[in-house]
Each structure stands twice: as C-alpha cells, then as structure tokens.
Image 1 (cartoon, each protein chain N blue to C red):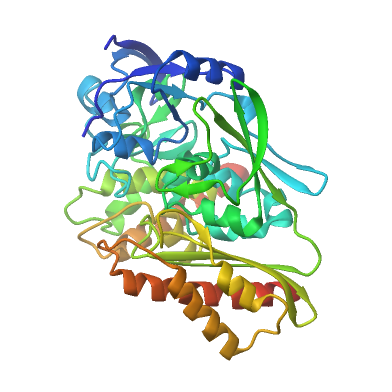
Image 2: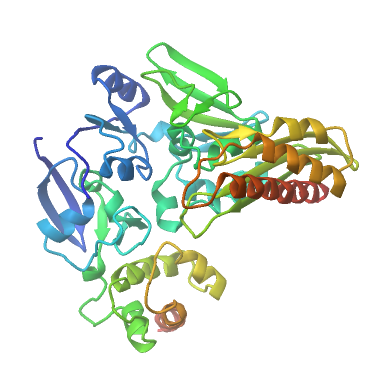
Length: 287
Length: 165
C-alpha cells in the first residue's frame, strides 16, 4: 500500500514549519507518521503536501520550568518513556507509555503527534486531561498556551487553529499527596484501547481532595468522567462509592461499535478500567 | 511528482538513489536496491516483518518514507553477517530453530539485534516486551524467545573474551 502523491518539504525550524504551512494549501504536518501514514495508505487522508518536522531540534528536549515539566512535542514515546526526569516528576506518563503501541512504533511515534492528531483511540489526550496539562501552540499570529481541558472537541477535531503547530506539552510536576493510576484494556500489543483510563488523585489523609478521571476510546474524543469525579471528590473511597462512580462512568460513555466490542461492553470496560486506575492512584499517593 | 535524491549509509556502504516522496523505505530497499531480506507483511506498522535498524533504532520500514532515510544509517538483515560468518543472533535462530516458515524471521532478527544492545542481559519477560512489535504465526514464539536468550548469552561471552584478550 502506497499513499497517493504529495509534495514533501522538510522544515528546519518552528518558524520555517509555520511559514511552509501558510504557503501550502491543505498541507499536513508529519511528526512520527505512525497514525498519518497508515491513514494515507488507506486514502482516509490525502494531503497534497506534507511538512516534515522531524529535523527540528527546538521541538525536542525535556526540562522542568518552575512547577511544570516541559516536554517538546517531537519527543518520541520511547524518549519520554526512558527519561529519568519524567519518571521522577510525572510517572503517570512513564507507566502509560509502557502500554502504548510497541517498541518500534514508540521509536517513531511522538507525544505531540499523539496529542494533536485527535484520534479518540490515542492514549495521550486522556492523560493530558487527567494531568491538567497545558499545550503550547505556535502559528502565524504567535504563540499561545491553552489548557488540555477543552482542547479535544471531536474525532480528528481539536482546538488547533489552521496553520498552527503544537510545540510543547506542559504538565504539572507531582506534588505531595498526589497519586497516579493507569489501566488500559487492549486485545493485543499495538492495538488501540478497548477502553483506557488515566487517573489523578490528590489525597488528604484517606479523603480524596481532588480527582481527575480521563477516558480513552469510549466517545468521539477523550473526555473526563466529571459526574464520577464530583461524586468522589471530598470523600473517603469505599467499594459502594466506587460502584456508584462506575455507573456514572457507564452513563457518560458513548463508544462506537467495532471489532473491539459493542457500546455496552466498552462502556462497562471503561468503568472497570477507571475503577482499577482509581484504586492504583490512591495506593500510589500513599507511597 | 518529481523524484528526490536521497543518500544514506546502507549496511556500511553509501547509497544514492532517487525516490518519489510517497515511496516507503521498505519499497526502496526491496525494489530499488534489490535487498529483499526485509519483508512486507501488514503494511500498517503492526507485524514487524519490515523491521530495520535506522540510526541505531529499530523502525518499521513500511511506515517510514524513503525521503526520511536521507542522511541516516540503515542496517538490514543483509548487513548482519560479516566476513567471519553469521551474526550471533542468526546463529542462535538456527541453533534454537527459532522459525518455521521463516517469513517473520528477518524482522525478528533485526529487532533482536537491536534489543540485545539496548538490554544485553534480559529476563524472559523483558524479551517478550522488547520483541512485542513482531508477530509470528507459526512458532508460538517459544523458540524465538529461546533464540534471543541464546544470542544474549553468546554475545555476552563473546564480549567477555574480547575484554580479557
């Protein structure tokens, strides 16, 4: 399978990529290409022009700025996975990436591409929601920072404006009392999630003082289980309360039927993944 | 669409060729450079039979554009053996019978070659995780895992004898 014809341009800097996006109508950015190229082979996407941002050094690097961990959009999954700084400051990313795709795909696929692509099956959007991340976008009108919450609008539809490029991901570094959990059900290595759930909790003794529950691949885009979060926030988590939260999560899901299962099955699995991740997160906060 | 010139190091030799932007690296290797050891399987980055080494990393060459290989170093299965004979990974696949039909084998060996440099002394679980991007429909994987274990042992012994020599 070979994609249909396109022009290929290699961008040398962020500014160069933005200029090339402006010059070429309907051009697409290619990052790792592990979502885009398969779609192009199947003719689900036929961009007349690709702008390759793999050579842009300023899109790499991982650092800490104040209380934020700053990850360049073009870090590959394996670069984030193998970063001791990420492990120390935000281990949810480390644990979650172990379950993303496979070793070869993680060598090419990038965290920024995964966030910006807008596929509901991608893992990072829900993680960004659970972490309350900020996304840095640059375009012809300059640079802006937008919260991940509100960025994911639908299938292949995000808050990115035309001509913009995702350049950085900023996640709050782990504070005292914070715990993370991640559970993902998949049929095999390399498959998209049947359902996945990253969870952030902040504990005050045995009470959950704050919680964010992300959900992957059980709606048109990643979203938070807000009704369940509201039920759990401010409470000591019991089995009965978790069961009630699970019912609210099932109600919130709206997955499409496909070979991974029926909407009913996927919604129940989403609730189960979230419950497992909540338990993990509470345990993680104690350590 | 106008062809573009690319130049890269392939198995230790510099190659120059012209490619269309839409051409995938695996097609360039097989059809343009006549190295057919790299196979084409799913063509959607799942099965791993097209695995090659690019700049010291395993990649699936069905999901890399040939133009992206410009100025890189690529190693394919044809580059594994040297003047002294088969690579330890190849010998181990023979010794442990780590194949049946052989279709996935070149991808398996290229992944094992790189994986054992990333993790020279892996546990069985680490091997299964490290090789998880390569599918085999015949063996049930047992002998492939054994082959990687044997290759790990022999590579470590070879390194030790180099150090003590």
